Amino acid sequence: MNEHWRSFLESTDAHFSESTGEILDFGDASGELHAAGQQTVLAPLTHLAVLDVAGDDAGAFLHNQFTSDITALAPDQARHAGWCTAKGRLLASFIVRRGAAGYRLLLAENLLAFSEKRLRMYVLRAKVTLTAQPECVLLGLAGAQLDEALAAAGLRAPGDVLHSLQQGPIEVLRLDAQRVIVICPLAQAADVWLQLAGKARPVGLPVWRWLDVENALPLVTQATQEAFVPQMLDLEQIGGLSFNKGCYPGQEIVARTQYLGKVKRRLFRVDSPLELAAGSELFSPDNPDQAVGQIVTGAPAPGGGFAGLAVIQVSYAGTVRLGARDGVALTARAVHPEDDAPA
Image (cartoon, rainbow, N blue to C red; front, side):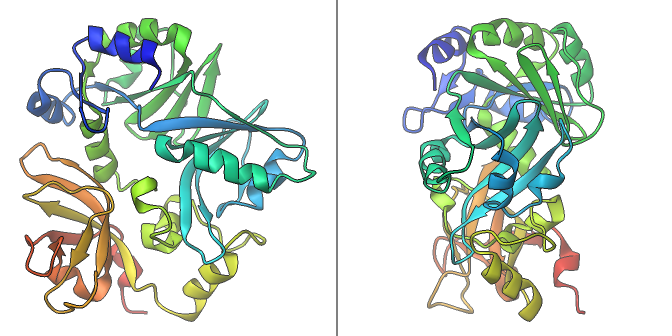
């Protein structure tokens, strides 16, 4: 995190985790969680980063690397995407937005350096440039009155989900029906924050993660890199996986999984009395020899306990336990039950 941005947030009573450096809350963690379902909230999205991809061949380059149909993006349209190893395992997940000057990727901050370096390896002679944007600040705004909050900062949101509006140097991307991401230069971030905070309650990153859980939006991070194939995260359900495009790394494995056999692990919403850390393994007493799942993301829940997204072997979802076969029992329900309905 940029030190100037951190100093500003500290001046607004942000509390940081000593171990991870992420923003935990603004003085009332419980109240902020409850506010998320009742009023408009504002979160600093320090867990995300921006990577810009430009050049004459940028669209074709990304299309040939990622799991979704990048060349079909209209200007100012965005979509989810994954990036796989040759074995079909996800190295990272992205929101990809097409703009006038190229493409913008939003991804986990702790995968930015890795992704930039590895993507450069595939550029070769293509007319493509990759530029990390460490001085782009990302703010998350959520709630039924988010348009009013944006108006206070002289901004507005696009009407359609996964579309973007560029307003001077500031971009507003609609993530879902009641959430937007505001992307602005560091030089303007403090002013934009203060204007938005006049109409929205500042909240810590755990609140935004809980909203990701509620909206079944997975994010590949360093803790889960190479743990999942795209179907395990239900990327096809959110437009992040196309079976009608050409080759990309891992495409053969992904297609074979889809057409030659049932996907044995799927995305579940889980509830727990204990914290759910990304990457934590899940077990079942019915299969004591190996893990049957893994946490994708987790957050405190407004009603107490913790909520998360997890990839779980479907046949063991009813008996899943955290950390060990005799660990605490979790309640799990499929995010998209139709995925596992009988054919």
